[in-house]
Image (tube, rainbow, N blue to C red; front, side, top):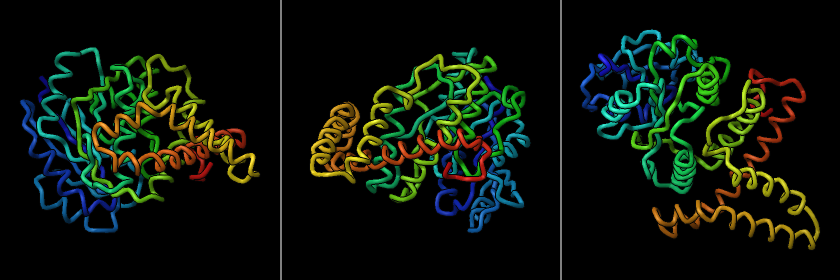
Length: 333
């Protein structure tokens, strides 16, 4: 049993969600001693005031440094043998930390683990529900042993985290710092597990534009990270699967058809039909859990998001050719 668990919640302009995120963490029942650390990343709203009402260790950064830096600051002040990272818009399910304890006790060969979202987010709009399904579904396609980390809900042994100097702090906001840490963990010989029973409810109010940009930016950095890896993947990654590769190609091939002639319209219809066919299992998954209404709204969102992902993938490749590495000051290439 771990003597102490440190839950670290980085927060930036999270006034509307931080209270429930903290409450969900403090309500956890586990055998280990528990401390909750909130790192306010120079919020411009009332995040710090809300967090200060709870019995947590509150760290206030003087300037906005990004999620990686905020998590690192929390980890450096943590006294637990195990670090649990939870985003400020993720609400831990009851019993979540018990599942973390039990997993590490039963699988001591693993140094870190990653959880998943609950079946539905707290916000029931079309964009939040679709994106929740997209993330959750693809996490579940992964092997038990994985080579990526997930800042939204994860745990890692503190001695291992310290040996690798934690998250990279070169990324603005919250972007690819967690995936990059996962790659370094795997390349250093540490094992990471996907534990689907560890869940948290996502409370982000995804707007349509924010969702598209999120997928675009993650694709830019994801392409660069994958290309610059020191070694190839050894385990199945839910997002990096053949279907999604086909989706990217279909989306990119549709662009000339969209601006082309009447003949191209038939080609576009063929591409759309192919897109629907290859994603049948994903759509069946949504329908079985959420019904027709969310399926009808999710299909066009899925198509549009993969257009953003295709554009981000191409932009990331262009960025590499132009010498724009992971530390590029541009969020577009």
